[in-house]
Amino acid sequence: MRKSILGAAIFSAGLCLAAGASAQDVPEQFVVSGEAARDIREFNQINAATARAIVDSCVAFATEHNTSVSIYVLDQFGNHVDMHRMDGQGWNNIRTAEMKARTALLTREPSHARMNQARMNPFYELYQMSAHGLFTNSGGLPIVVNDQLIGSVGVGGAPASPEFTDEMCAHHALTQVIGPQPALLPVEPPRHPFTGEPIWCRGGAGPDPATGGTCD
Image (cartoon, rainbow, N blue to C red):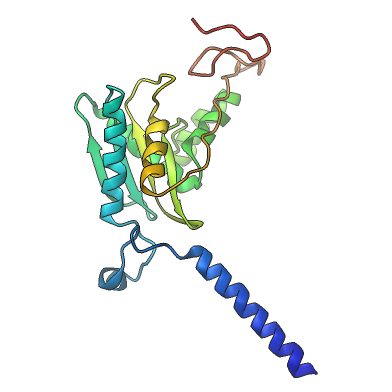
C-alpha cells in the first residue's frame, strides 16, 4: 500500500515537472539552438533572425505611417542583439529606445507601467530614473514566448498620435513575429504633484471621461 502511494506521488510529480518544462519550452525558430546554444550553454536566447524580423516589422509599420523611429532588441541578459535607426532620428531618440528596452527587460513588464506610475505620482519618475536607471515612458515591451522571457524591444523617436506611437510599433512587430500579445495598457492622466488631481488632455491622456469633450 505504501509503495502504491509513493509510486503515485512520484508519477504525479513527474507529470507536474513535465508540464512545467513544456510550458517553458521556446520554439527553436525564436532562439539560438543547436551547437550555437550548446556552446554558450543557453537555450532561451533570442536569435538574430527573430530580432531582425522584429526590427523590420516595426520599420515597415512606421513607414506606413510616414514617421521614423529608433529600435533596440536586447536578449534576456541585456545584450544588444539588433538595433536600427531610421533617417531623421537623433541621439536622444536612439538613447531612449535603448532605455525603454532595458526598462521592460528589468521589470518584466511594459515600460508603460512605469510611465503610468510616474503620472500618478510625479515624484516617482525622478526616483525611478535616479535610483534604478528605469525610463518612465511607453515604448518598451518584454519579449515572452511560452511564459519564457527571451528578450525585450524598445522603440523611441516618433511623435505620438492616435494612429501611431512608439509602443504601438513595438506591439505590432511582436504580434507579427511572435504571435498575439497582451493588450496595451491605458494611458493614465498626469496628476498634480501636490493635490493628486488628474490633469487631463496632456501626454495623450485624453479628455476627462466624466465630462467628455475633446483635447483640441
